[in-house]
Length: 170
Image (tube, rainbow, N blue to C red; front, side):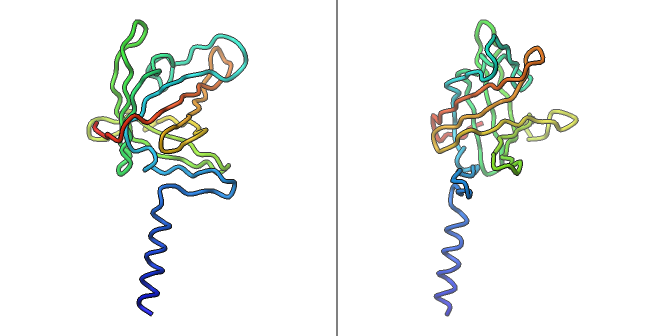
């Protein structure tokens, strides 16, 4: 009897600790462990009506400044950071964040974060943050859709992230 209980307990733990869960529609539910490491934004594109767009992402910089940016995600406490590289039109910055996943209830998943200080305390007095839809996530690639507007017209900025290492140094 004890052996059966141990086997059932072990099986339960094995199932509950797996790195990802599959929902009823076949979508992989994101887990924090999937993001562990250092990621680089390798592509940025705009989705919406035809035209020229200018997007200031996360109230930090123009969307073009995020191409090549490095993001570090630490899953056990939700801390992380991202860097914006210096260029002719972009000011370099390092931005600490506290992040998590959000499930709005419609079968989709969102990445959410807020800016924090070195002690992981929110910088914004109103404790505001940002949410972006996750179009795809696996151990090596994340595609995130950031909804924004330009001159009153809505469009999406689609950012493709590729994992570059397992390093989680802030």
